[in-house]
Image (cartoon, rainbow, N blue to C red):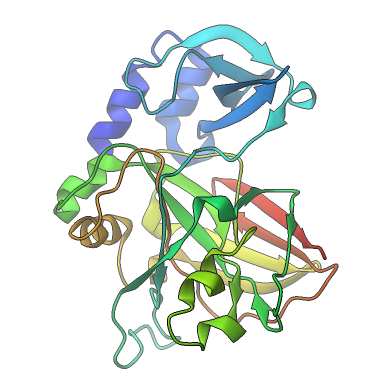
Length: 280
């Protein structure tokens, strides 16, 4: 990721000194990239002083430049920060409370669907037949370039950044043979924050999930069994990842069933907050 991030930073040399400082100072003032709609048109931009600064193309493009146009947040509609061709999830990626992988634990992956994406403020909708709907606060890897059969070291260069996410799961379905896609990929089952943040120490970020204001999950990505680079490397051995693809990296601790009206809030250190209500 280091080389990719330096390319990103160099592409923003024309930005103001304040914004350039954000790109180089790390966790204290990270750049936040996203997508938004203004007067019916979709744009890419980054959040900084004054609002959202418009970019002339996708932030994945090394030639990206700002246009000089700044939109106040109250005049735009934020979108999911990327349009992924695929969404992958990692199961069983956190150590037990004793600091060791659970017995027999290995990295397992599953798929969610791009149609399951929603952003902060949108409602989580329980599908027909749902009776055991759960939250799972997670860090989400955002891929910035094509990745196929990469080593962990090579994988670092294709990680654009991370976002905050919630892997909604209907556990009733997950117990049924061949039904993991309905369990994980139903509509609204992939809430994601509006911003992608590059340049953080992804493998040591704190994450807190609240349910109706009460803390129900609190952990650090330090406890992941597989690092971000290892996750991308292993998945790339089987699936070609492309710019904008998402990987939900797993959750830690216990979760509880959700009911109508519940409010789930996930906060990822250095990235932001994702907040969704369970609807009809």
